[in-house]
Length: 207
Image 1: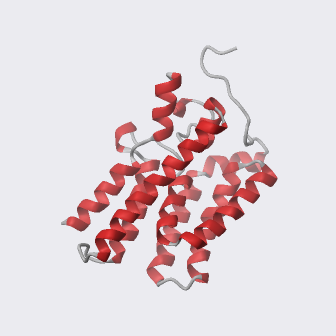
Image 2: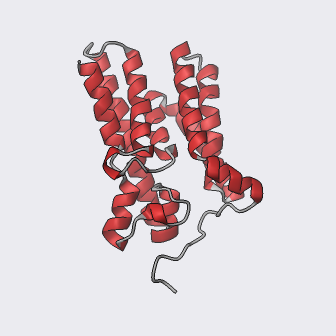
Image 3: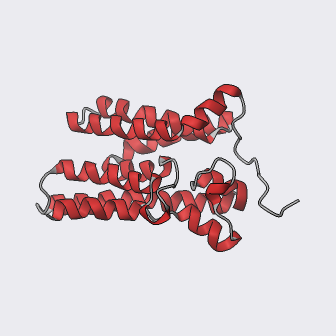
């Protein structure tokens, strides 16, 4: 019972849409109706600036970290059915971010929350992948491209670090989810229409 409960809690934690709350609270708009339609940090940056976007990214990552860290703590105390519950919590918190219960199941892309999940599971490897993502973003100014590259790197990292097979399949599932969520970004990238980092959009009523 506690295993099922902790997975549900992970989903509910993920469902706290930080980007939506910031945009609604400080600008009075639904961030999902602007720009890319995502409630993630990149879309927030186009409305509220870089500093606020970084805070949103940190808080979105923290959701993933705390959900998995809580599950890991319970697993170490032998309160969960198995380590697979920890991995399912990782999937659940990302699913909550992408399809939040509280906000009509429309949220972000999941990249920042994925970062938090893997920081809890394998911090050193995650930091290496994160540096790679930052370099890609710095060179191209496409956040979506960096996020996609990071998602692709996840299952590969599981193989390189010789984690148990379930970690590879877990990483593969997360990778598929993140890439699927970026399908519209991929189309825009291929057409050369994807917005770059720092590009702004107008809010309703602005000139």
